[in-house]
Length: 229
Image (cartoon, rainbow, N blue to C red; front, side, top):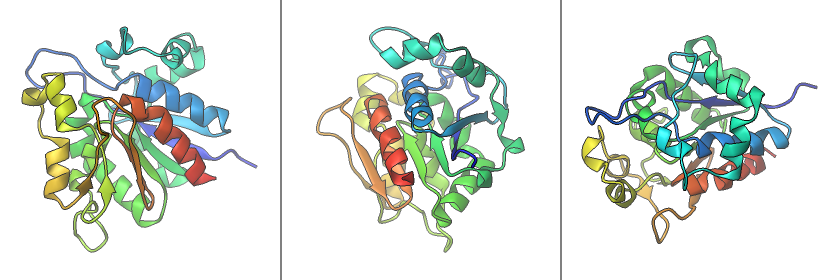
């Protein structure tokens, strides 16, 4: 029997607006889920809009933001090869996978959140009951995701994601295209958050799993594995 498969879609965008800062995907949100998934017996396939090397946010490669799993991943030839040679998303059929996972980082606000292919992929997965897990800024993709009846998918659903107070604490809110929290609330979501910034918080509502921040990465990865089980 073939192993169950999870498609991990990363951002191809490396610039934080016009701030001059570099961004990409937050490394902990790739590394820890990768090991949770593979150690649970799943095949993990990486993709990005442009394919090839997916940019990693440089800040996430520095202490105190590194973890045992980011260190492990940097020394893992197979893992590093996967993120340096991601598949072109257009060449991947998401229907061949048992779940979709989107790590966060600011880069995706510029590409994945506005990518019609990504939006349609998420809509199809959710409509067919395929679990979709998103952590940190990845729930920003839900801004334009619709239910089959054309209404915002998040309307009346409980979700989470990187909060305004966490963006403000990093002094990055003014550089962003949109506020994840504000836009999801505007579309009718019941947006929840941890009682304090940077604490893990994961919400599961039907086939959709959302996590608030990097600390939520191991929790949402385990929750996705449990959901698939």
